[in-house]
Length: 376
Image (cartoon, rainbow, N blue to C red; front, side, top):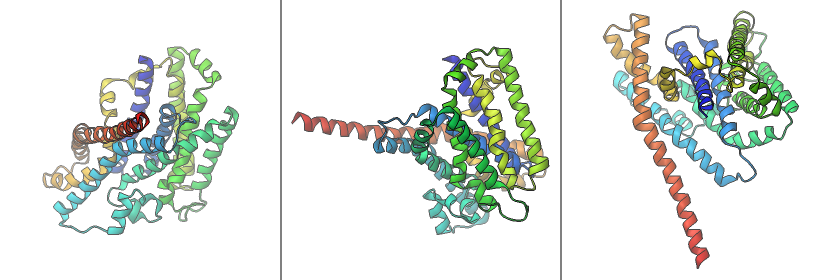
């Protein structure tokens, strides 16, 4: 059990590192678009893998069960989404004296429909990274259908499906002219369009299904810590190779080299899944306490990064900190981590527990009412 918990922690730490890389790309590194794309893709693969692991969606799973599933996800994510929206508005009032809101954009955001509208003013509106939550809710909504559909396929057909998913991402992202749109959608909309991100999410589900096969389990039991370390290092090197190909050969022909996102991410994700039974040295390093602590607030760090930046940047500018880029980055992210921790501990967690409790109490009342009718 401890090894399994450590395995979950090592993957959570990898996701945290991906989130930190996105923050660096947004707030510090001027040309971090390609890295951001790879890291966001990793988060979607991660979500698909753990959705398949913890939610089996068997034949007894119906509309009521799915309503409860979506409510629990809503309880965890939507309060944070609203908070980021509020911080954006407050920062505009404080520093720009602007009290106006674009009603259409606001409605699109609050209803989680902004990513479906092919207009950057909508999906990059009040909080530029909040499109991630809009996509995630769509993926959760589709999860029972996707998980059941993929589970019915044989391992060979799932492997073929995985290859097809990767091919679709290549076709979707490739363009022969760097000044024109991709073959399917405009660059930005391609990046955040929910059905496109379903490819990464489905890849994570397929990876989980493959890990449940006898061949995979037999392979994982034959590993030793030293072999696991070698596999993890090979995964990192293969990821680095994809990144190098990305940067030198594909970047000008595809929006942020979108076509190579899933292969690169899977090359890193799969080795650490494989070595979960016998962790290598890299996995053990990923389980150190600082990463454990920060991974619990990783989602808050991701969603609040932009709005906290806009809220505190003018103040740090007045203090002269902005003029020193490295110091500004360190101070800004210290504030971000503090705000994320407070938000997680004193806002997201209590509200999530309250909303989940509301649903459970509602179910209990329904059960009691049915029992009362039967006794009559």
